[in-house]
Amino acid sequence: AYMKGRFYRKGAIIQKHPYRLNREEARMLPQTLLGRQLRLIGNDLRRGKTTLEELDRMSLAKALSKNGVSKRAIRLIDISLNYNSIDTVSAGGVMQDVERRRSAGTVPLRLKGGNDSFVNALGEAATEAGARISLNSRVESISQNTRDVKIRYIGPKGELKTIVADRVVCSLPFSVLQGISVTPGLSFGKSSAINEVAYTRSTKVFFQAKYAEWDKRSLGSSVWTDTPLERIFSSTGRLGDEKALFTAWAEGDGSKVLESMPDVERRRYAAAEFVKILPFMKDSIEKTHSHSWTLDPFARGAYFHYKVGQLNRFQDLMHKPAGRLHFAGEHTAIKMPGMEGALESADRVVEEISGVPVKV
Image (tube, rainbow, N blue to C red; front, side, top):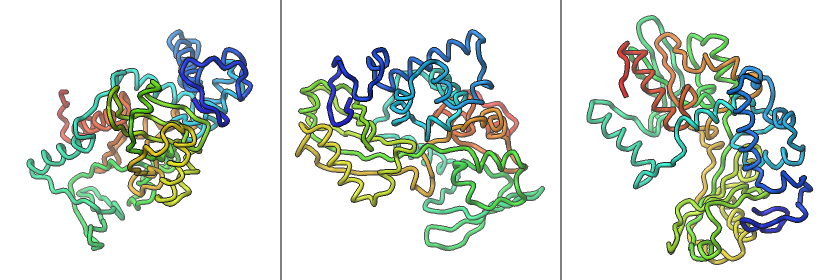
C-alpha cells in the first residue's frame, strides 16, 4: 500500500496509521476490510436478518456505518470502489453483485491473444452464418410499428443509412442508448431505467515495463494507493519474467482526475506518479497506453450499477422487451456479471425471439 507519501510492504505492521484508523481497521487494506464487511452482510442475508429490498433503501456507506465501520475507513474504502460513490451506490445492488460474482466462480480465465480474440471469433462465426457486420457506425434513431423496426445510422464514411428488420436486439449500454431517439417512446419505467441507472466511471493507464525490480521485492499482484492512480496491478508478470504489463486503474469519482487530461498528458502524469509511488521502477517504463471508458462514446462508463432504491425499481424492467425491440448486454443479466452476463442475456433474447429454450 501507498498512503500519504509512504510505501508499506506486504505484512508491514503499522504502529500509527496515517489516517488514524482504529487498531482493527488499521490491520487491513480498505478493500480487505470491505470484503470482510460484505461477508458479514451476506451472512445476515442468508439468516434472514435483512433482505436485498431493505439494503436497497440505503447506500453502501450507510450499511457499513450501521455495522460499525468508522467514517475514515469508509472514505478510504470509497477509493477505487468499483462504483461511482460509496454514498450513492445501493447496498442491495452491491450485495447482488457479490452473489453474482460468487456464482460465476473465483478462478480467472485468460484467453491466449487477449479478449479481442473471443469477440473476433464470434464475429467470424456470425459472418460465416450469413450475418453482415457494419463497424465504425453510429445509431441515430430506432423506430418501430406493428410490422417492423427501422434503424437509422451513420455509416463509416459519414453517410446516413437505414436498416429495416423484423426485430432488433439492442445491446447498447443504457448510458449510450439514452442519447438515441426511440419511437414510439418506451414505457415510463423503462425510460427511467435507461436514463437513471449509473455506469461506473473508469480510466486505466497501461505500462509496459521491466519486471525485475517488482519481482525482486515480491510485491504480489497489486498496490493500493490513496493517489489518483488508485490501484496499480501487475497484470501479466510472473516470477523470472523480463517484462510485464502494469495497470493503473482509477474508478468512480476518483477517475475524474485522469479523465480531465488529454491522452498524452494523462500518460505522462500517470508515469510520473507510478515512479513516485515505486521509485525502484524508475527508467523501467518502455511504453504507455491509456483508455477512459467514461469518455468512450460507445460505452460512457465501464459497467452499470444501481443507485439507492434502483434495485427495487428497475431490476425487473432492465431486460423486458418493448414491442419488437429486445435488450441484451451485461446490464440486463440476472445471474452473471460482466462478459458472462452478456452471454446469459444473449441466450434469453434468442428464447424471446424464437420461443425455443436455449440449451447451454
